[in-house]
Length: 250
Image 1 (spheres, helix red, strand yellow):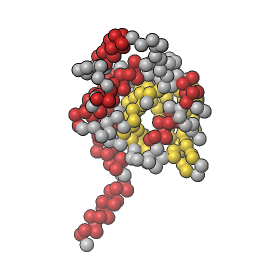
Image 2 (spheres, one colour):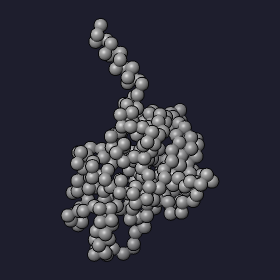
Image 3 (cartoon, helix red, strand yellow):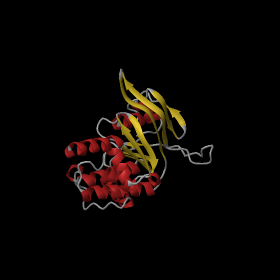
Image 4 (tube, helix red, strand yellow):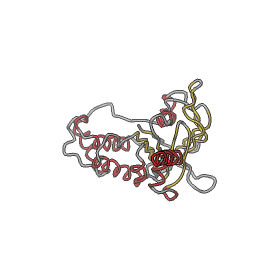
């Protein structure tokens, strides 16, 4: 999934750069069910924002709000500093989100040359670009998706569990290209339940738990051990471990 913002990034009043995408105290309810509550995050150019959480944490709802599939119930969604509330994906397209441009005519030779060029820019080397995408490995599919999003003008990439169900080697390939996208100046939202993968490439981390934001810190503020502990349940897990170990001693 890709968010495309075509407008230039402006300076914030404080002198820093305005985030490409920002959430301020965003909430989402479906009737009496609260899927998200008071979520705040920022996606900057040249940074990876890791969104962590188990199943049911609210990650999918967050993605749908940013991409215009759902609208928030509370709070603000800002694109380049401008408050935005989409009523439909069509309105998101009008703002340049998930926008794609494709020529009317299909030129196989030109398409092949473009594919090779764009993959090469990302350091992706496929032995044969004519093979069906379905025949590629999981890691190769993810890398092609990243290159395609970049080609169609994306400034913010939203990657939803790109390393899920991949082996160590293929996951490493995907993480390598996430870093390449960051170094090329893109803002990356990396959705994952794997704290090890998030910590390898992330600059900023947000942890969701049952729709609430449990952690918001930068890479310099947290190490892998603490991030993993928080992902696993933090103090609750430690208390449970103490209780279970205590039970064994009696």
